[in-house]
Length: 199
Length: 199
Length: 199
Image (tube, rainbow over all chains, first blue to last red; front, side, top):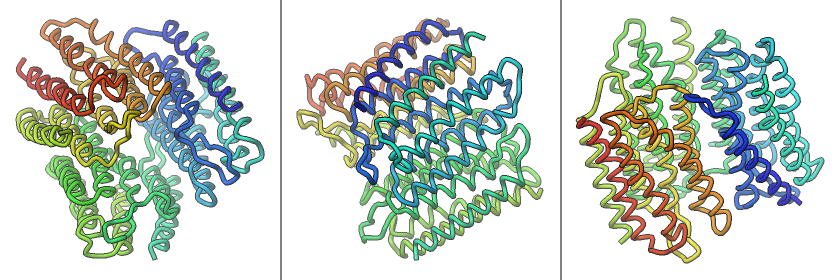
C-alpha cells in the first residue's frame, strides 16, 4: 500500500517535471517549478526504496528523508512566493530560506526521535514555521492573496499530518499519512505552480 | 552532570531566543540574533537527547552534532561581524560563509574520527579558521574593533577546548568541555549580540 | 593500492592548495581555486580514512563521500565557469549551483544504493547534469570556449567512470576507478584553474 503511494508519487512528479521543464523555462531565470518537481521525484524514489527509515514506537515506518528534500524544494517555493508577493529585500529572502531549512531540519530530527525530544523538536519546528509564514501572510498584494490559501490549507497540512500520524500521536497509519502527504505535495508543488503560471 | 549542562544550555538559549525575537526585529532584515539563539537551542536539545554521539578512545562521549549546528549559527554570526566591520563585497561574504561551513564540517569529521585522521581534520579545520579570521581581524573600523576580542577570546576558545578535551589530547573530561563550550556559546552568541545592539 | 591513490591525492591537493593560496588571492574576492583544492584535500583524507564506505554487490568498496564534497567544490567551479563565460544573471547562477548540489546529492544516493534504485538515481543525476551543462556549453565567448573541452572531457568523465566502475556495471575495479577519478580531479580542479589564471 505504502509502496503503491510512492510509485504514484514518482509517476506524478516525473510527469510534472517534464511538463514544467518545457512549460516554464525563462532565459536567465531559475525554472523553479521544474526543480521543485524534480527534487520531489528524487524524494519519492528514496522513500520507495525504503532504505532510510526509522520505526515509530508502535512499529510503523517513519520516512524521515522527505523532510530533508523539503529543505531544498520548499526553499525554491519560498523564492516563488516571495517574488509573487513582491518581497524583494535580500535580507528578508535569506531569512525565509534560513527558516525553511531550520523548519525542515528540526522536522527531520522530530521524525527520527522518540519521546520528549520528538515533541521539543516538533515545537521548535512549528515556532520557526509560524515565524516564517506570518510576514508572508501579512504581505498583501492584489493577485497574490490566493497564495495565503495555499499556505494555510496546503503548507500547514504537513505539520498537522505529522502530528496525527505515527510520527506524532499515532491516530492513523503511516499509509494514510503517506497518502495525505502526496495530496499535499500535489497541491503545494504542482497545482500551486500551475496557478502561479496562469496569472 | 553533562545532562545538567545541556538543560542549562536549553534554558539559557530558550530565554535569549525570546529576548532577541522581541528586541531586535527590524522590518525587511534578518533577525540574526534570534536565529543564532534558536539554532543553538535546537543544538542543545539534540545533545541533551544524546542519540547522536560517538565514544572517544578513552570512552568519553563525543557530542559531534554541535559542530553541524555551528555551520548554521556561525554563518549568521559571520554576516553580523562582516556587516559591523563594513565588509560588504559579496565575494568576500560568500567566502566567509563557505569557510565557516568548511571549518565546522571538518570539525565534525575531526570529532567523529580517531587517530591520525582526527588530527589531519583538526589541522585542516584550523587552517581554514585562520584563513577565515585574519581578514576579519585586519579590517579595522572604529566602534567595531571590540569584535576582535570576541573572535580571539571567544571563537578561538572552541578549537582550544576541542584540543584539550577527549576529542583531542584528553587532558580533561567531556563534562568540563561541555561547560566551557556553554560559556563560550553564551559569550559569542548572546553577549556578543547584546554588545552589537548597544552600539 | 587504493590507499596509495588516496595518499597521492592528499599530497597533490595539499600542494595545489598551497600554490593557489599564494598565487590567486584577490582582495575582496573568493579565492575559489584555493578553496576547491582545499575541499578536495579534505575529501581524499576522508576516503583514505575509509570509515564511510559501502560495499558494492560484488564486495568492492564504494567511497560515496566523494560526491558530497563535490557538492561544495564543484559549486565553486560552477561560479568560476559562469564568470569566465560571462553568465552573470543571479537567477542563472543560483540555478547552476542548485543543480550541482542536486547532481551530487543524487549521485551520492546512487553510490550508496543497489539494484533498480541505484539506476533511477543515476538517471536523475545524469538528467540534472545535462540540464546544468547545456546552457554552459551553448554560451560562447571568445577566450572561454576552451572550457567546453574541460566540461565534455573532464566533468563528463565522472559519470562515465561511475557507470563502468563497481558503482555501476562493475566492468573494472574500485582501484582503477579511484585512479581515474584522481586524474579527472587533477584535470578539472588544478589544470583548469591554472588555465583559467593564465588567460
